[in-house]
Image (cartoon, rainbow, N blue to C red; front, side):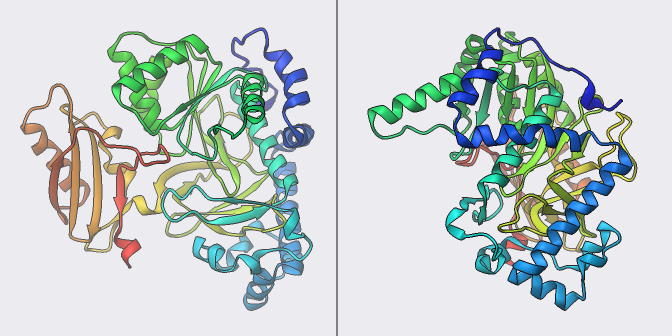
Length: 459
């Protein structure tokens, strides 16, 4: 029995069924209805046993590569240059013979990435999130968007979030937040849609104490089944809730877009009173991996994604769904590692064992050694009692700017403890400039970068 056959349905409100089966299909729009048609087939493929899953995945990859070779100019050139024929590919690992596709490639050669079998006027243009670089434009058909939405529905449902559930988002991406349309009729329509979806949006760009108190009150009144949030924003809200000794009751908190540390997970679970899980995705390709409920390990979304990690730890994503502008071996901007074996939960899909963070969050030492920011982030440890947050910024190889936020118990010796920790982490190779800050402010998109390396950007 796979985890897909198990029910993890939390308590929900009595109108969830009405929203899921009547209101949302009726008023949710063409794209939402199209996504629902893909849900049964996506669910079946993700529930396949090990050998069948591998066989179907390999065939999906081969089919995409054959399509790209025959109709996409850039990949035709690359495959010919590499002597690579997807019709003769026996193992998906052979795809490593093809060059990596970078964000710069996509921005500079967008026309060469479009398939001749898709009319450009029928495609939807979107942009990457742009967390570590300028946003990259990409194109995809409506059907690809719907299938990716269907995968999100299936993977969320496995964690206990069902269509029709009342949900909240502690979010910062402007393109995801509801805007204020012009005109009375459009505003009424937008308000009706939000009412039908029954979603509470909390903008994460302002996380002052007053805002956090307002968010906690709004969540308490709204009583969502699930909360989707950035880990940093959810952790700040959790800290505030615990300080005020007023925990909430939200059955599921789903974290994404940043590294999730064990200490954060514990605080968020204590503050919100429910299960805490994470997923990993990118705007260009949708869900890349989502946690299983039993082991909290990230399983690759093999129905829509082929995932690799190269020798340098860069994660390379091949989108199996977007045939109009295929992204093959696309360097999504993060580093991580795939596990050797399978997960004890019984799900046969590959496991993303480690997600080290963004490429630009990896520090470069004078010796040439690379240090992932996730291992030198004080939020991952309980060793500097009086310092609650740090932001490490590397503009040149030899020095690190250390911005730090004092906690209620701060004592001067805590800075010595922090310096010792950094020296041990960086093998005494760096000099430090310490700067005290009141708080580490999020970016305009609501995400907070605690580790920033600009050395490679300059290079």
